[in-house]
Each structure stands twice: as structure tokens, then as C-alpha cells.
Length: 199
Image: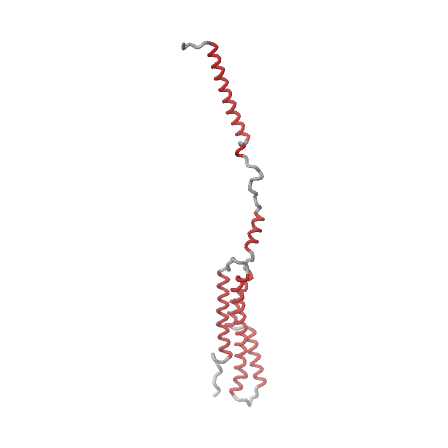
């Protein structure tokens, strides 16, 4: 019937008490494991499979090695090319000295009895040609240096582009060199600013 004996009630009570104690013990064990920071076996990462950390110094050295040359030499060459081009157009102290020397030589070697045309050529014409010659030398140097700088990436590390400012400066040097060389040739041949007529 619906009535339980004392023994049956005692057995059930004992079983429930045992189950409650097991739950409490399991809960305490879980809290203890959480307090100590222990991880379950499936969450533990072995030291062998963990990724190795690379020092910042090693990363910097590897990046520098992969980058290759910094392009400082090419930049310097481009600036030199542009500077030589400017000098070829504005003149240099070597051209000034050469012109003064030709003037002095013309005065010394030309007699006072020489024709006016010959005196003009010896005193002024030769000096102007000397100036044009030195301007052409600087223009040619600017042209060659600029071409070398522009052609350098073809013989360097493949896939490494040249800095835009280096290209711009090198092209400026090439352009100034071409203009300076053209003007020097025209002046040396008396096509541009030739000697005045003596008559």
C-alpha cells in the first residue's frame, strides 16, 4: 500500500544523502581545479606544438636583408646629375678660368698689326669657345650620370622599384644635360651668339 516502512525510508534517505554528498564533492573539486588554474587535458597545449616567438632584432635583420640596397647611391647620383646639368647652363669656375686664359693668350700672341677680325677671334672668340667647351663637358657628364642612375634598377635586385624622387631627379639631370650639350655645341660652332662682323 502507500505506507513505507522505516527500513525502506531509511534506505532511500541514505541513498539521497550519498548522492548529495557526491554532487558537493564534485562541485568542490571543480572549484579547486579552477582556483589552481589547472586546465583540462584537452585544453593543454604542448610546448612542442606551440609557435616559436621570434625576437624583434631577428625580425628587423630579416626585413633589412630582404629589402636589399637602400638606394642611397642612386639618390646621390640623381642629385649629382641634376647639379651637373645646372652647372652646364650657368657656368663653372673652370670655364671662367679657361676663358680668361684664352683671352690672355690671344692678347700675347696677336700682334697689334693683325687684322681686327683676327684680334676679335683671338681675344674674344677663343675665350667664348673655351667657355662653351667646358659647359659641354659638364652637360655630357650630367647626361651620362643620369642615364646610369635610370638604368641601374635593370641590373639590381629584381622586383625592387626605384623611388619616384630618384627618377625625377635623374630625368631632370638628363634633360638639363641634353639642353646644356646642345647649347654648348651651338655656341662652339658660332651658330648661337657668334662673333660680330669686323667690317
